[in-house]
Image 1 (cartoon, rainbow, N blue to C red):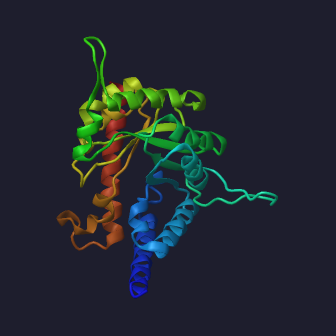
Image 2: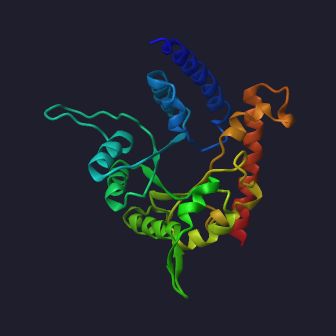
Image 3: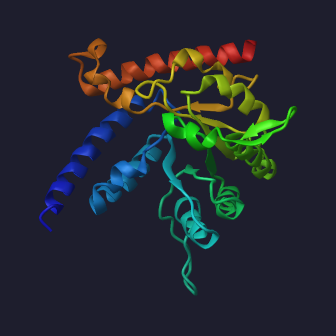
Length: 280
């Protein structure tokens, strides 16, 4: 195929760049969150790069949260869960293989419990985690997630609230010693005013909070995503960090230095938000 050399070259360039990004921040962040679509668009070469980068991040002692938003009917969800959070075994063969050895996976809940429970079961069995989409950072999320399911005088709640209630139930059996579950929730930083309500609904869920920076989320409005212990949230920022070298404030810096500087600035903001939450 005529396009294959181009895809291979793009994948190779992406691997070199992103390995440099990992090296730049490995000692100041706890985790990385690769977006599966950005690799899948490059075909087989891109998928191979993603797998190598996952292993490289682990070598640098980083957790890997794969942002793939997987789900389907139960039988297909079982296969997805094996691929990303479990192991694959062959009948009659010794041992098992891990297709995607990640620490956590984002999943879409809108097929209901039978499409979610396989992921949770694998996460519990293999000591991994899931982050269920509850309130996503994109502007049009309001079209569905804000629809009222119940409009009672004392108990009005939206589709997103209903998903949050399910997340709390799904996480009951996997609460660790710090009081948080392996079943977490994705809550966009672009909707900070809603975070306190979701924290009340999901007190034991870790929040994955994307959208700071390029999508418009403000680091100064993150405190409400954290629990009263100053824990309970992982703040995710992607484009504003890996492309920091394009910003005027970092102009002239090598990309790794720009990324590290931008990441350190974000980390300082996150630490202030944690302290604010703990002192509230």
